[in-house]
Length: 276
Image: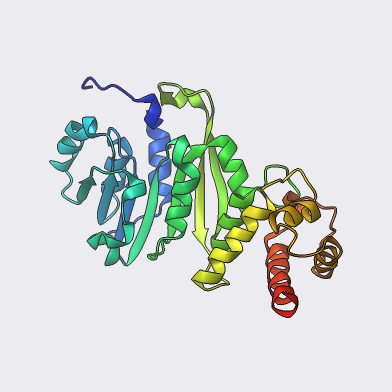
């Protein structure tokens, strides 16, 4: 293998197990009509397995030291296009092959330091994927896929639930990576829901509301929202709105489901329109 210098600041860890690479590619259920966006191509070991199954692979890689691996792969797979850019700066929806895709799929081994913003970028992309299969840190995978009434629940949990059904396919011990990270990983699959409940402006307001609810997640929802609202609603009135939505004011945000948060968000909007 050519001499490469993996960068800790970029969270670079190479997945070296053949069976796991195969598993990720197979979990994408690719066909000749599939256009795959691979995030973080690295040495192209997953890229190759995607190219064997899909009609087109768009592989995004920030670090150009891996270009030699990509050039070698391109000699045998003409259906791969490499983009050397930070995925967070890339306008996914403007990539021609993705704009025209009949079957759009996202996959990759995601750097730990950009996991949450990257997942939100993918979920909010105007071009909707059929499935997204990502390798993420185990702790993050649990937070993304947990249900209400668990301490791991956060605003990101409910934002993912808003768009998708997310499930852990498989846990991957750290020993299967080089260099070996300090934490284990997990393969998570995201399956989009048919429709989103709100238009884009309302969705943004709802997500802002969720951020506020979880800002002080160890406090009761009454105190957390009361602080976030900066006293715009009297404590007694806020308590009444919570109870009307079927929420115990002494509950914590982690114990409230997405549907209950939606009802509370809508009830608060009605209260605001009537009283503020």
